[in-house]
Every structure is written in structure tokens, then in C-alpha cells.
Image 1 (cartoon, one colour):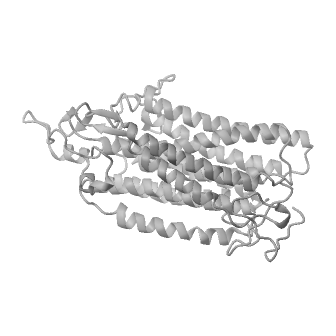
Image 2 (cartoon, chains in turn orange, green):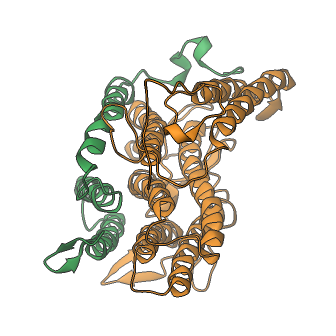
Image 3 (tube, helix red, strand yellow):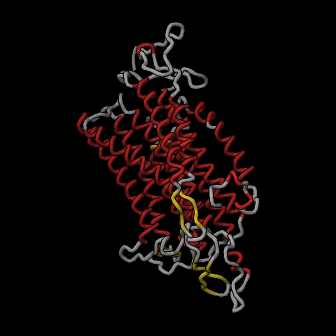
Length: 363
Length: 111
């Protein structure tokens, strides 16, 4: 923190860079606009890359969308170059402060991180809105079954009918066949164990990030000792994040068959965006439903939890770099804001899981 | 950086609270699965605990409380929150029947 002064009257930094940081941080840049445009073109094009083929119950690859995908990526990388061109001359000797209302004198990177998190809030809110809309707007398959006895006259469904079954039906449902954990007479289905472990893992990882930051600020430790402790806390966070992703993959594809636990994967339970045969418990007993369309239920679950998983994966990449930096003594009492700002991101990921876990896994 | 409540480090307290509340969430669902409590009760428990955990993480771990810039960052968070409220009310809580009712331009090819 030093020598920061900004002279608005005499310094007019280019929106395309490079920038003279002697006059403070630049206020103007086309990079975010260009990159947003590129991401928009990419996503709209990417959405049409795989087209559902009802005839063969699968997807077709649509090569026609490739040119626009490349255009979108090109625009995005052009924006990235503009950003790099503006920033590469910064030697990091001071923490630039924001000057615009209402963020005057708050660290610019902190403001940037919060604005990023607010945009992330919009993304996850749109996913939750989708979940609420479909969950409330589409009739529950379970409710239909519970209200109609399964008799020889047939099921209360016609092939192709759309109804909703929450992922929690397979994860925390009373039909689960293996109940290894029981505390005080209350059992926990094995299918819920990976999700429950993940929830605790994320909370502990939030705490280890806090401890890394607190340790980096400690002045009573030798530099080497402090660096080692910070690195260890960051590595612990990365290990917990890796555990989260691993259990997620196990839960989706392989099933949790560890020690006494015996939980089928969601794929084994036919909970996917393609399958059209699901095992249900109705009032009349266990029945496999053929032809009922549950793609929306599965899509909403996989897109939401998958988007969250991608954020965890991004966190692992960031943690790998920060652990390496801590190992080389890169953090200290006067240089720990990177951990703080990464911590904001990581706590946000935890925050989203606080909502995803009850909404998708428990209810 | 050092904040305490009743002589205890606020971050340690928050961490302990989050762990206990998560255990209560899982326990409530386990009880619900075995029909020891009603679905309405478990929804109430999940929503209540979710709100408390949300506030604990955002307020303490993300420093939206107890720092000089906490208030302005919290207030500006209301900007996206406004959009989120609009989205949940006017999209999330509507029930148009099925996705097939969406206009063609709003659907991917093949739907």
C-alpha cells in the first residue's frame, strides 16, 4: 500500500491498454463488455450443439453450430487479450482502491470479487427459479401413484406423460434398501451418506480457508513456520474439495459401496435425462414405470448440482496455485488479500450448497 | 481480524454452529423418512436452518458484518437481490403447465 494517487484531470487511460499505473488503477476498459459478448455468443451456440432425437431416444451432434461457437470463443479471447494488455504492466506494489460511488476507498479487487459473486448469484438464482417453477408446475409422479392404487387395470400414466420426481426420492427416500447408520432409533439411508459427508466437507473447508487467512495475518510466527501452516490449511481445503467432487462422481455414476455402506448410484436408479423407466413405490407396491418422461426432473438436478460442481472444480484449481504460492512463502501479514478474496468465492460456493443440499437432496 | 463473542472466537463459534445445524438438518430428514415427523415439519426445519446457515456464512465468513465496508457491500447486494425476487415471483412461482407451452424461439431445436 503506497504512493497511491489518482489524477483524473491529467490522466486519461486508454480503454484498450496498456496503462500507466503510476496514476492509479484504470477506470475504463472494454474487456468485460467484449468478454461478456463472447460468452453470450458461445453459450447460445453451444445450446444447439446437441439436439434431442426422439426417434432413437438420444442426441444428434449439430455441426452447424460450430462456426458460431468458434466466433464466440474468439470474441472471448480477444477480450481476454485487452484485459491482459491493460494489466500486465502492473507490478503489484500497491492495492488499488475503488473511486466510484458507492465503493470509494474499498480495495478494487475486493469490489471486483463481490460484483463477480453477485453475477454468480444471478446464475444460481435462475437455476433455483427453474427448479421452483418445474417443481410447482409439474405434477408429482409420487402423488399420482399414491392417489391411484396399482391394479391389474394398469398404471395411471400414459407413455410420454410428464411428471416430476425429485432426486431426493432416490437419495433420501424411504424405499432405500440399505440403512447402515442408525442413531437413537433414527436411521440414515446409505444413499444419503455421500451428500451428507459432502455437506460437512464443504463447511469444514470454509473453516480451513478462514484459518489460512488468520494464520497468514499472524505476526508472532517465523516466516517459514507461518508459510508452512498457511500451505497446510490450503492443502486441507483442496483435499476436502477433491473429496466433494469424488463423492459427487461416485453418487452419480458408481454408487457408494464402501465398507458396510451399499448405495446404488443415481445412474443405477435410472435417474438420468434419457431413461424412461423408473422404479417407484406406490400405494399398491413397487412398480417400474415405462415411458414416463422424467427428463425435466433429472435435467434440473444435474444442471444445478453440476454447475455447483464446476465451481468446486474451479476452486480446486485456484487452491492448487495458492498452495504452491504459500509453499514458496508468498503470503504474509501484509500480503494475504488473495486468500481473503478466494475465501469469499469459496464461502459463496458453500453458501450455494447450503441451499442445494436441502432443496435437491433432502426434500 | 480478531472478533470475539462472549470471549470466544466468532469464526470458531460460527463453524461449530454450522456443523450442529447441518447435523440437525440431516437428522430431521432421517426422522421424516421414517415418518417420525411430518413433511411440513421437515420443510419448516430445512427452511429455518437454511436461513440461519446462510446468514452465518455470509455475515461471518464472508465479512458482511464486523468490517468497515460491510454495510455498503451488504446494501449493494440488494441490487441483484431485487432481480432475484422478481425472477422467483414472476417465473419461479408461475405454473404454465409444461415446457411445451413455451414459444418455439425459446426452445432448443427438436423440442
